[in-house]
Every structure is written in C-alpha cells, then in structure tokens.
Image 1 (cartoon, one colour):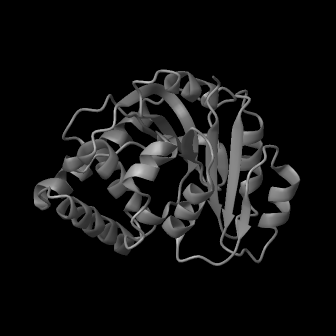
Image 2 (spheres, helix red, strand yellow):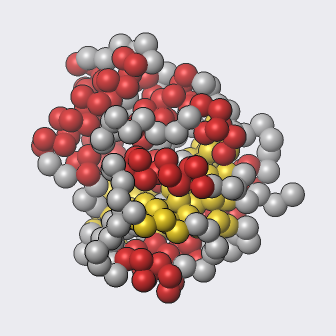
Amino acid sequence: MVTKISIITVCYNSASTIRDTLRSVADQTHPHIEHIIVDGGSSDETVSLVQQYRRHSGPLVSEPDRGIYDAMNKGLALASGDVVGFLNSDDAYADTNVLSRVAEVFAMQTVDACYGDLVYVAANNPNRVVRYWRSRPYQPGLCSRGWMPAHPTFYVRRQAYQRYGGFDDSLRIAADFEICLRLLEVQRLRVTYLPGVLVRMRTGGVSNASLRNVVRSNREVAQALRKHGFPAGLPLILGKLASKLAQLRWSLMAPRV
C-alpha cells in the first residue's frame, strides 16, 4: 500500500514567498500527496496564488485564526493522509524526492515518526545557505534537555495526533517544541532519523525575530517541560545555547544543497 502524505501549509499574507512553497510540493515525485492550505484571511494575493499554483488536491481554508498553532490544528483536523507533515509558506523542499524518502520510511510499520536535516537560507536569496541544522538519531532524554528535531522536517502518523492531540495553542512560540516533547519523550513514539537535508527554510522565524521573542521562547520551553514533569532551569538554557552554537558551526562546513 502506498503511503498517503498530508502536507499542511499555514500562511498569512505570504504572496512574496508561497509560490516557491507550492511549486516545491507540486514537484515532488511521491504520487499520493494531500496539500492542505490554512490561510489566516490574507489581504494580499496569497489565496489566488494558492489556487493558481497548487497541484495536489486538499482543503483550502481562509479565515481568521488565533495564531499559527491554532491554524496548524485546523490543518490536522482536515488531514486524511496516513502521515502528516508541515511545510511553512516561506520554506521549500530540498529536492523533488523528499516525500518519496519519507514514504519509504513509513512503509515500515515499526516507525511512528521521522525527521531529517534542514538548512536556513537567506530571506532574499534562497540559494544561499546561512546555517545548517544537522539532526541526529533520537535518544531518550534529548527533548527533556531542550533539544528538538527541525519541525518542518518532522513527519508523524496521523493516528498519533488523533491519539495524543495536536498543538497546545496556549503557547505562542514554542508549541512545536511541546508537541515534539510530548510525542517523543512522553509517549515514546518509535522515531527514525532520516539523514540528509529535507527542507530549505528562510531565515526570520518568529522565535528568533527579536530578543523579546527569544526570551519568550525559552520561557515557553521551560513551561512545556514543567507541564510534563521535567526540570527546567539554567542548565536547560545553557544546553539550548550550546545546541544553537553547534548549528552555527555546522553552517561553516555545510555541504552545498
């Protein structure tokens, strides 16, 4: 049986970047893709570009929401695929075979989730790599120490979301960390690391957009850890900083992709 993959793209006034995202999904060689678009009620040309460039069927919602994680939960509720992944409206797949590789992993019934590597690219030049996010095979305890896989590379069986829930939208910046913590560390999903770059992500993400957001992100990570009974304090923050420095070091040695 061929794995059906639901890709959820959340967007708002994304006309300047979403064309590349849509083409990236359209060019995938995997034959069974559902591309769900959840738009926050854009006032620019986002919706018309979606209608023009989206090549795979799937629901299109355009209405106000309570933030990105509320929108992601709307997408989860609409998904019908065996596996669910998220691709932001300013990101693109690294090549045309990414979803085929993901589907091969999920052909093994012993796998509940997978993730891979990601490169950050310049916002005004998506061909220029500025940082390399190299992941690693998951070991128990990684998430509880503040580590997480790159969320745009994270794929999970839809049944797991149905069983364990979607995003905690009371968190405004770090709900992606919380859901990785919940699924990998608390529920112990069987997860596989898929080496290689899966996504090209433009710089300028919300969590790192300002010092205020960095502080808030760390607070929310600590909140998520405490929610699930894990300690949160200075060692966590230092560990996260060390992880960021490791990512920066990789950028200097990153392969061309």
